[in-house]
Image (cartoon, rainbow, N blue to C red; front, side, top):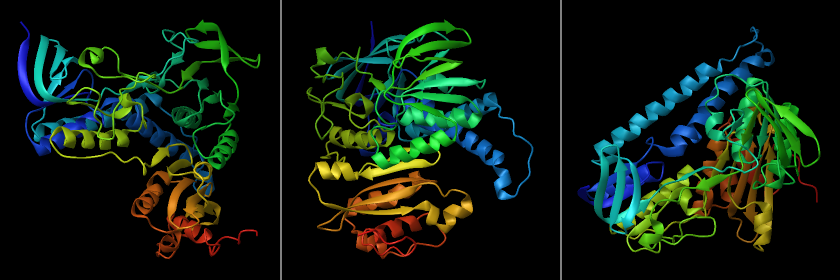
Length: 468
């Protein structure tokens, strides 16, 4: 007979949505159970955000040493040790996992290891190593996340075919690599392996790389990646895999060209983990892509059942999942919270970094909003040149009638840090005039924000006036 326990709230999935929801719910009451079948921290901490940033930090150090001559430093040629880099990455993830576990225990969250499904809206079934366990609960939050999407074109049982997960586990640097997809994940992996010395070819279906980003960002990043030696083939697909070998692949492109490489990494998006959860039996409705349908309170169609994070198919970002987790937890514990997606910063950790928040010029135009654009090139910034990081620009999108900042795109060193000043500006309804007249420290990268705000009024000091 299955073991049964009672809980006020059960959360399925301990990624950045689930564990944050568990802690917030525990702050509001007791009796929170968090079920996880794999590692605490989910994709973000173990196979996504953190591991990629750990490897990027290694390759950035490597590239800096290679370019040391430009800073007046003579060094021997550095030799990358990918095995050590991967071990370092794993230690960082392990340290963060332990931190998450300690936080959960400190908040008296009961962690159950196993695979969960809904027996009903008020009962969760968990398959554990010890057997089946039933948890009677008042509320449920589903936070089961996503995994790398797979195309039938590729045999993922072959050792040379990788998803982003396997791309983080290589311990030998491939001489050549094909990356299918040039979105966020594909571009970050191109940056990592190009930095390690791999000859990278990117194959992209769309007319431009980073197709969801602003046109100017996409165009400049293509030029930058090209100068680094990365070959980019847009409006191209892999039509057929001609050969699989233990040490490589041969692929035929839609252009007729044949490519060979040691490894082929597929990065064409995410597949939502909504299967085998007992959703139909519990009355939880799904959308066309398999996403769990929710309202602004993160409620599903089944009373008392909430869903958050990638599995709801919205903005697939860890920080969005965390805020959705807080919203769902507060509602499950009797509060009244609503999600607001108007101000969501997004970052891409290429070299240079890319960050954006709010509207692009084209999106504002689609909405019928008349805008002014304030731009500033980092090549005109003293701190950026002193760092050897003069590539890139900042672009502010300003509502012409109210002067409020409604969007920003940045391509620069530390763009992922700089974007948050603009997120706050949009959140608080700050105008370009107010931002431009806020004193920024010199020398700093943040001066570019001030200059771009002033450029929106054609009064930037360190930039030529806009042509009339």
